[in-house]
Image (cartoon, rainbow over all chains, first blue to last red; front, side, top):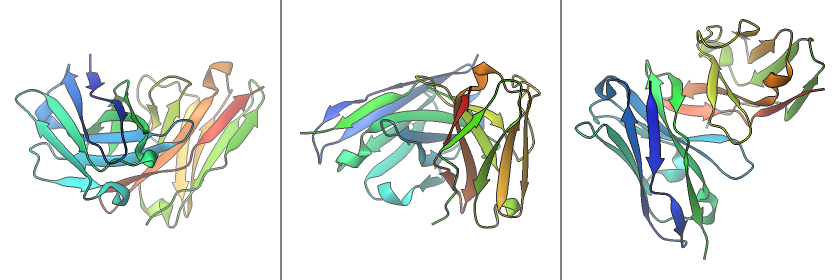
Length: 118
Length: 106
């Protein structure tokens, strides 16, 4: 069974930083691209970033470029999202998702909540 | 940047057919994906690559994509289908989601 478990969210002040983690199990992690997708309270889904199997390619939505960094540790079956220079509008549940064929987000974690507030 | 537009809400009676549209410039030239999200739950893919349905998704869910519009169709809608539905496409290696449509079954 595919499992994706996010952690690392919390309350942070504007301008602060966090490192979100996603631990994967139940599949061969190195076979898949991985994504982060976020959802602000009461709002829709917004794709944030994705990363290739070996970490050599990364893509970001424009609103987070230069502030967020996606990475992965294949030895630990984990993907990370370093979030810096946080703004109120970054407040959201952050989901990690497995990408099949670099196209389909076929499995999602339960999400971790990031709240940016003073 | 690429945008996908969905109606905020759609209502349907139980047993009837629900259609949720997603509009984007030349969307038919891309693949469309549809995700279902129930309150308090993570999204679930219900349609991928325009028309394909994951094995765990009921046959009443179907999709199409042509021109500037992709459509998610739910035939014989059931109360359990009440949820938010999001379309998604890829543009220049980045994923774009529509704003979501709340499907009400009443």
